[in-house]
Length: 81
Image 1 (cartoon, rainbow, N blue to C red):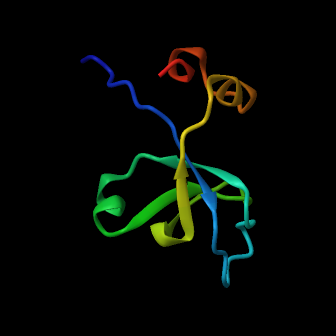
Image 2: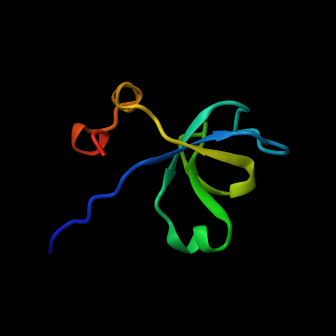
Image 3: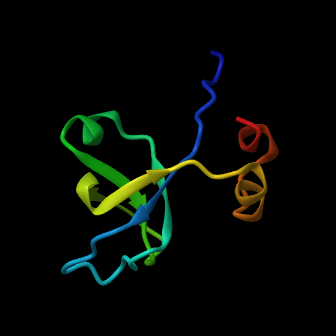
């Protein structure tokens, strides 16, 4: 079975009420979760280094330049996309 290539997505936190594990203005990676997305949530790797669901309205989606993706440790095979 051929593995599907998934592009990492990133967001900036713009609201963090009652969320001790999110920092305003910080960039977070969004993990693929189509069920969560349909319900208006993002699966985020937060400051606890665990992934949790957060309302999408707490974030603004961003596109990172290639150099930023590499600095964040995104594998070369994914960073170019």
